Image (cartoon, rainbow, N blue to C red; front, side, top):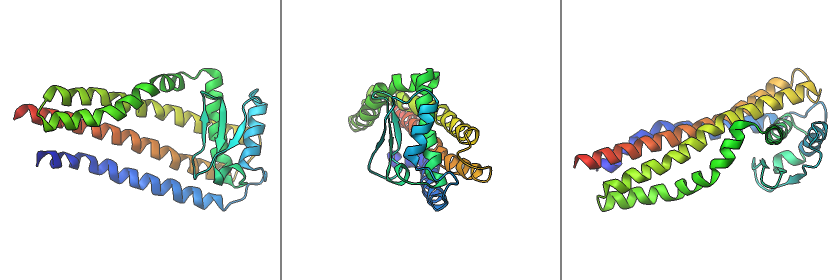
Length: 227
C-alpha cells in the first residue's frame, strides 16, 4: 500500500507534462498556419544559416515524424521533420533556427552541451537500470538495492537539468539569428518566441518529472528502512 502512496509525488509533474505537450502541439499548430514573410522552407533557412555561420558542411536532412527535429552532434547532421523541413510557416522557421542554434553550440564548444553529450551513456544506463533495481529491491526487501537505484537515477536527473540551459540557449540563438538576418519581420519574432517557449516547457516538465521520480525513490528507500 505504501508503494501506491508514493505515486502521489508524481501527480504534479504528470499534470505539468500533459499540459506542456498540449501547449507545444497547440502553439506549433497555431503558428504553422502563419506563412513567413521570407517564404523560405525550414530546410532552406537552416542551410542559409549554417552557410552564413561557417557550417556549410553540415547537411540538412529530412526525418519522418512530427517535431522529431534535432541536431546530431555525433554525425554532425541537422534533421528536420515533416512539419518543418518543407514548411514555410513562422513555426517551422523557428524550430529550424533552434536546431541550427545547437549546431553553433557544437561548433563553439558550448560547455553545457559538452557536459550533456558526455553524460548521455550514463543517463541511458541509469534510465534502464534504476527502475528494475528499485523493483527487485522492494520485492525482496533489499534496501541497498533500492538506494542503488536511487543513486543511479541521479544520472537521469543531472541529464535533464543540464538539458535546460542547452535548450534555452539554442532558442535565444534562434531568435537572434532570425531577427539579425532579416528572415522574419518584427511582427513574426514574437510568434517564434511563443513557439520556442512552448517547446522549452516540455524540457522543464521532463526535469521536474525526473526530480519527482528521484524523490519517490528516496521516499521508498526510507520507508523500506523503517520496516
